[in-house]
Structures are given as C-alpha cells and as structure tokens.
Image (cartoon, rainbow, N blue to C red; front, side):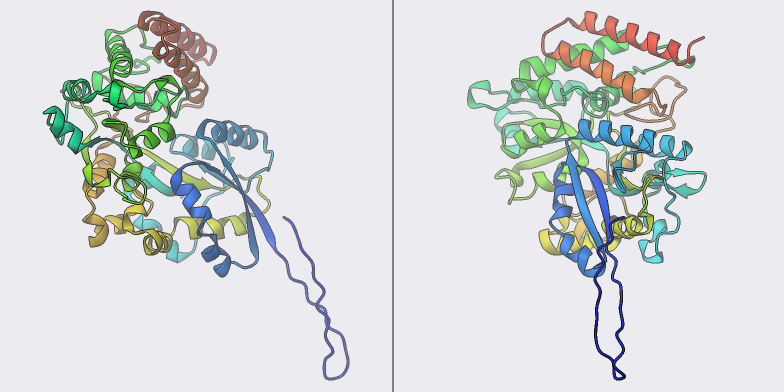
Length: 437
C-alpha cells in the first residue's frame, strides 16, 4: 500500500489549525494482452470517478508470460500483484492451496446469482467464489461466408471434422494469401494444447486412462495429431507453429483466414466493422465432432482474483466489483456497442434482447452450456476439465507436450516421433508425481 500524505491547514473561527490526512491506495493488476482487457484500461475514468482513493497500476503480458509470472509470484507469496488474471484451471487448485482471497463478500450489486452456473461452478470451492469472471468462453468455428460460397462449400451449423477438412481444402488460395484454416500452433498448455485437447476429446482420445496412464500411444491421438498437422501444413498460414490466439485473430480480422476454430469471445471483434472489413461476411458454426458424442468445444473464463499475499484486499475487491459487475457490461455497450460487451459470464446478458439479437449470442451460450468438465471425453477419465486436466502438474506437463507438438507442426519431427516423446515425457512426469504406481 502506498500512502500519499497531504497536510491540509486552515484557520477556524477561533484561530485553531486542523490537519486532515488523505490516503490513496495503489493496487497492481496483472492481466493478459487481449482486446477485452486492453479495452478495460481505456475505461478507467469511470472507475476513478467511483473510487477516487484507489490508483491502479497495470502489468499487461502475453498469455504464456502472464501465466508464468503470476504462478511464480503466488506460489512463493511474493506479493507483487494485488489482482491477478487467472483461468478456470488455476482458480480451484490455488484456492485449495490457500493462495486466494474469497470473494463471497462482494457488494450486493455484484449479484453473484446472476453468474452463469457453468462459469460460477468452475471458480467456486466449497461454496466460496475465489475468482470473478471477466469473460467466459467456449470455442466455435468462424468463417468467411463469401469465400465459402465462392468455393461452393456449405459449412453446417453443427459440422463434422470431415466437413471442416473439406472446406479448408476448397477455400485455400495461397497465391491470394487466403488460408483455408487457422488453428493455434504456438506452444503452451493454454495455447496449442487447449485446442488439441479439445480436438482430442471429439476424436475419442484422452490424456490419461482411469489409472492415470498417459494415452499418447493410442490410435485416437495419432489420428488427432495427423489431421492437425496435415490441415495446417496444407491449408494453414506460414509459420503456423508460432501462431496463438492473438495471431490467428489478427489474420481473421484481415480476412486472411477463410476459417478458424477458436474462442467464442472473439465473435464481437470479428463482427465489428470498426475492426474488420469483412464483418458482414462472418459466419459461425459449432465446434466440430467425429460423430462420437463430443464436440471440440472447451470451457474457460478469464477471471480476476486476489492473492492472499495482497496487502490491499479491500481496494482490490472494489476494483474486481467494478470490472466484473453488470454495470461494466453496460459501460462497454454505451461506448462500443453490445457486441463488444465481455461475454459468457452473466445470465442477464443473454436475456438482454439487444445482445440476444447478435448473430453469435445463441451459439456462444449453447457452446458454453454444452461443455461438460465432469464428463469431457468419450471414454472415462479420472480428471475434471475440458481442455485441461485439473491437477497441479498439468500446466507444466502440457507445456512440455505443447512444445513437442509445435515442433512436429514446424516439421522438426514426425507425428510418430512427437507422440512417442509426449508419451515418454508424460509417463515420467506422472510416475514422479506419484499418479502411476
């Protein structure tokens, strides 16, 4: 806490001097460098008008760097940050470690019961909310309707992977700089492995069997990685192994991705004429399946939490209430339209006729509601989580596997070599952690 002291001296009627003290609390907020979080920083005048005694300092980082820095700080009790941006993976694990401050005492106007049940459940441990969702998301397919029509392909509202592969082939025009499909290739448990784990669910693959034995040596995983590498090698942009969420979104906004599967939160940007000259041509479809009963749709919420090590908890709660309150959604809408309001967190947003009329609103909420963290795969598994396994070891393990698979995409090793390496790494890590006896 930083105190700025000012002595205010004035003469009273009897000539005495009175001194008053004004205190300003500074909080440090660590967040991810995506469009929604950057937009928030441009709306801080509203926060300061309501909270003149609080100053916010921002630390805005690329996704992988944010995760590394925040994890290191909270695990060591470093106290560098007062508010951290975390996800559905970290929240319950860190809460159980005693690393997070509970948020059940946020003001009544926060309206905790308005949070979408699927999102709230993932951020709650033993009845206590430990992170407040800024936006929630699943995943879906976005595509350019004009390119699909020109190529003579129809992308169904509920496509199969065969539909996706055929459409990617038909719409690719490398000479014109049009890539049939853009998928995450950048290594990271929340980058390429978020996508590949969701894809694997739809192919009948899984990270571990019921006894925590890794499954990368299964035919299902070979089918997943083979199709993934083939799609991006034949129909994807150059340097696909370096592209994550932000890079592929930029390509889509430029009209260079004929089709992309990624987070539903990007729908607002894609359909905003101020951000994309192809806004009127964007179509949406559910994440694809293989006819096995599971689609490749994930479930995530970027959320704000307070480390137990913060010495400015009350000021931090005031900030979180402002940033994730229903009033914040209305503030964004008043400045930039309802399409840019942070999605996927509140029931009231989808009950709002103006928002419900947007072309992506129903598909987003349907995708979120369809994701089942407690039953994410075709075959049974011992873990909870859709695009991750909710165990502490997953982040490090999946980052290692993500680096192996990214190298395969870059042509540095074959699919078979990558799967063998991923299996060996996973068996070693799970054995060392005591999961495999």
